[in-house]
Image 1: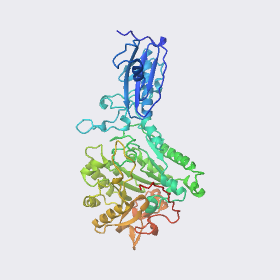
Image 2: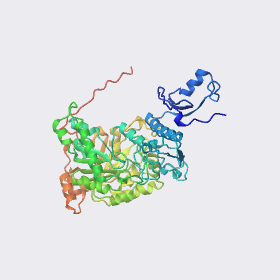
Image 3: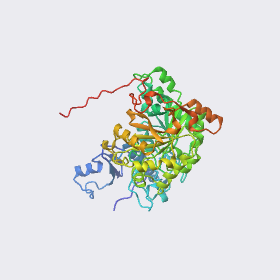
Image 4: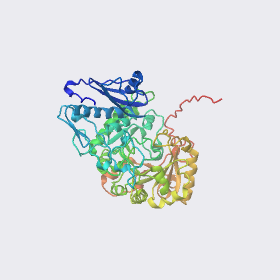
Length: 538
């Protein structure tokens, strides 16, 4: 029988790390004289067994050692590092005389209890309607499927139990920051758009510049909620953000979010100083954002104080372009006027919507339809956003056209899906990306289905994007008025009087109109074509 472990006072504890490779193999060796961590494809235990000629079950040559191997797989270093930090603190705490209760360490205070990380198995939405596991593992669960979520006690960073938790866990934060996000507080984020950088250099703006007249170098891309209720197959964040069906996290103040977003955005703009091609005057303008795209990642309308946040942006005369995934109809009804409100219409039938968006809600289709109906009641500019995925949703013309009457949008944006690489959560390939000619053909056919209610108004070839607009509202004497008079919009909001989308429209320039030689590229910008040196296959 093995001798009992000595007390920690007589037990010198040290940590040793072996080199790490892509395949992480964590092994713990606990001895009378040392506690060693080996972290490598071969791991310390395997090395010892190979060198001493022992089997995994035998300890003939190492009688005073007790060891076991645990944890292996292709996982990110940051996850194991943080999990190990938590585990090691708890282990040392137990050795010092503490105990474990409900999964949390209860100690004497000698170990830094307040520094422990959150391990959050918190989303009951990861189970199917029948209560069985869906088999889909999100990033926050990547450390392994935890206990049943309804029975798990949440451990907070201050060691209190069952308290309010933050949406962005350390693991999620590390992943998003690696992608270039600046995390705001506990649930918001901001990131510098590639088109912001492009227009700072005078190399062209995004499709919103062509369609609606925004100044891309003065646009701030942010979100007050990194969480979402869908797991779309084409999500360019590869599901590194949280998911949920309702707000159940700590909530930050909306004014603090706006202040932090502007501060972080302007810091990123300043970092563009000295970048080759950046225009001094545009850099100065970029430090005063005039537009806010509330569409970065997640579902911004989930944030309980979204109206207060929108009010604060408008108070600063910053326009708002808000995108929702059509799963929160009541939130849409309660939303105050925004400059332009989008609803993502990723599919036109129940089966295809389930396949593409992979929603958490069981009644996702009813919520989708109710969201379109709520959009119909809005007096300001409204948009259906269609993302075309070849082989998934490009054949449903009749079904799409049948949704026109449901939401009666002012505009319909049709954009080809952007390929962001394959991942464990998405098997899309370049074969699923339509050409601009495919998007144009789909748009023209869809306009014909509307029987003259909508026409193709604008295009942005670079973004593989086409805009349909309601003829009755936005085509005046043969000229399109898809652009926005932003100063007029802010004056209307400040007046407190009711107003409609026709009250702040502006003329569309010739170069943005569908069929123009420029293809939506602003001639006031300098077209930059990157030289590509592809290797010949011959």
